[in-house]
Length: 231
Image (cartoon, rainbow, N blue to C red; front, side, top):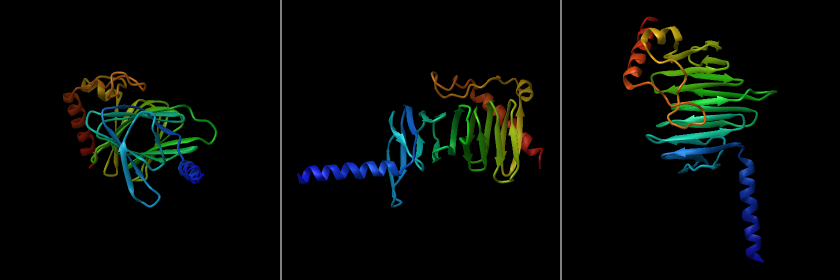
């Protein structure tokens, strides 16, 4: 009888612990190696291997290794968390927020209704969406967002400037400044058009990236020139 009571109490405590942590996040797929960092109520950090089907709670961080990708699902959205990335599920419920601390993420959000909201934060920007698809990266120097579908409301948290993106261009942020790379710019540079941002050949979000390293360097040089022209 004592054993049965102990087991029952343990189950009740575990259930209460799960109920106290809000989430509708779940890992849909893991390619390669990734970790989940979870902060306990006492402030201690626990790390475990990321596995398909595992719940992700508010405050958890997904950390991907080299050549590794995690597909993260929440109600109304899917996010491809790419290699060498730190990605935090900051806020759950009807007002969801995720934080791309470093690395790359490709995000697809279904059209939102009622009071539901979704935003993606970086160290120097916030993108609020109502139903769209966009690719974001941050590398310590640049933060960039490629608008693929729908509408995104950007805010540069360094300068305070806000702008709605509803056409096809890439927004770059650096040191409180912002520049755009338009379709016309890509054509002049001879770079491929389209929105192939996946690191996987069979991603549920879309096609694999088709830029070569040389083309990426060409794009970066062009962006550097645009920032230099602002000084």
